Image (tube, rainbow, N blue to C red; front, side, top):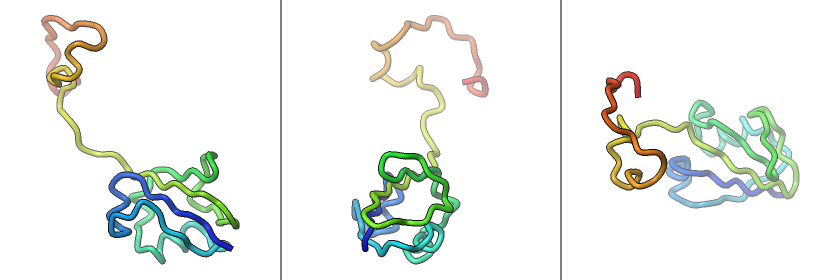
Length: 101
Protein backbone atom coordinates (compact mmCIF):
# COMPACT_ATOMS: atom_id res chain seq x y z
CA UNK A 1 0.00 0.00 0.00
CA UNK A 2 1.58 3.26 -1.10
CA UNK A 3 0.91 6.97 -1.43
CA UNK A 4 2.58 9.55 -3.67
CA UNK A 5 3.52 12.80 -1.94
CA UNK A 6 4.12 15.75 -4.28
CA UNK A 7 5.57 18.80 -2.54
CA UNK A 8 4.94 22.06 -4.39
CA UNK A 9 7.22 25.08 -4.51
CA UNK A 10 9.71 25.53 -1.69
CA UNK A 11 8.54 22.33 0.04
CA UNK A 12 10.61 20.37 -2.50
CA UNK A 13 13.70 21.51 -0.61
CA UNK A 14 12.68 19.22 2.27
CA UNK A 15 12.96 16.26 -0.13
CA UNK A 16 16.27 17.19 -1.78
CA UNK A 17 14.35 18.98 -4.56
CA UNK A 18 12.53 15.83 -5.64
CA UNK A 19 9.12 16.44 -7.18
CA UNK A 20 7.58 13.34 -5.57
CA UNK A 21 8.20 10.61 -3.05
CA UNK A 22 6.34 7.38 -2.31
CA UNK A 23 5.39 6.64 1.29
CA UNK A 24 3.42 3.97 3.09
CA UNK A 25 -0.37 4.36 3.40
CA UNK A 26 -2.22 4.11 6.71
CA UNK A 27 -0.42 6.91 8.52
CA UNK A 28 -1.83 10.35 9.27
CA UNK A 29 -0.49 13.32 7.39
CA UNK A 30 1.11 14.74 10.58
CA UNK A 31 2.96 11.43 11.09
CA UNK A 32 4.10 11.46 7.46
CA UNK A 33 5.23 15.09 7.62
CA UNK A 34 7.23 14.31 10.77
CA UNK A 35 8.88 11.32 9.07
CA UNK A 36 9.80 13.56 6.12
CA UNK A 37 11.03 16.26 8.52
CA UNK A 38 8.55 18.80 7.13
CA UNK A 39 7.19 21.20 9.74
CA UNK A 40 3.37 21.26 9.55
CA UNK A 41 3.44 25.05 9.98
CA UNK A 42 4.98 25.53 6.52
CA UNK A 43 2.23 23.53 4.81
CA UNK A 44 -0.62 25.85 3.81
CA UNK A 45 -2.80 23.33 2.02
CA UNK A 46 -3.22 19.64 1.32
CA UNK A 47 -4.94 18.32 -1.80
CA UNK A 48 -5.60 14.58 -1.97
CA UNK A 49 -6.85 13.13 -5.25
CA UNK A 50 -7.86 16.65 -6.36
CA UNK A 51 -9.87 17.30 -3.16
CA UNK A 52 -8.83 19.78 -0.46
CA UNK A 53 -8.24 17.95 2.85
CA UNK A 54 -7.29 18.88 6.40
CA UNK A 55 -3.81 18.32 7.76
CA UNK A 56 -5.27 15.56 9.99
CA UNK A 57 -6.05 13.37 6.95
CA UNK A 58 -5.14 9.65 7.12
CA UNK A 59 -3.35 8.51 3.97
CA UNK A 60 -5.09 5.78 1.96
CA UNK A 61 -3.65 3.36 -0.60
CA UNK A 62 -3.05 5.00 -4.01
CA UNK A 63 -3.64 8.55 -2.73
CA UNK A 64 -1.97 11.31 -4.72
CA UNK A 65 -1.13 14.06 -2.21
CA UNK A 66 -0.04 17.59 -3.14
CA UNK A 67 1.44 19.72 -0.37
CA UNK A 68 1.32 23.49 -0.86
CA UNK A 69 3.69 25.83 0.96
CA UNK A 70 2.85 29.07 2.67
CA UNK A 71 3.56 31.91 0.26
CA UNK A 72 5.72 34.86 1.26
CA UNK A 73 7.73 37.63 -0.26
CA UNK A 74 7.08 39.38 -3.53
CA UNK A 75 7.14 42.87 -4.92
CA UNK A 76 6.10 45.92 -2.94
CA UNK A 77 4.09 47.11 -5.92
CA UNK A 78 2.76 45.19 -8.89
CA UNK A 79 2.40 48.51 -10.68
CA UNK A 80 6.19 48.64 -11.05
CA UNK A 81 6.37 45.20 -12.69
CA UNK A 82 7.26 45.68 -16.40
CA UNK A 83 5.60 42.42 -17.45
CA UNK A 84 2.25 43.69 -16.15
CA UNK A 85 2.43 47.16 -17.70
CA UNK A 86 0.58 46.09 -20.85
CA UNK A 87 -1.91 43.80 -19.14
CA UNK A 88 -5.06 44.90 -17.41
CA UNK A 89 -6.35 48.41 -16.86
CA UNK A 90 -3.96 51.32 -17.10
CA UNK A 91 -3.31 53.12 -13.81
CA UNK A 92 -2.30 56.74 -14.07
CA UNK A 93 -1.16 59.09 -11.36
CA UNK A 94 -1.53 56.51 -8.59
CA UNK A 95 -1.31 58.46 -5.32
CA UNK A 96 -1.44 55.49 -2.95
CA UNK A 97 1.44 54.96 -0.56
CA UNK A 98 3.29 51.61 -0.46
CA UNK A 99 1.49 50.68 2.77
CA UNK A 100 -1.82 50.76 0.87
CA UNK A 101 -0.68 48.49 -2.00
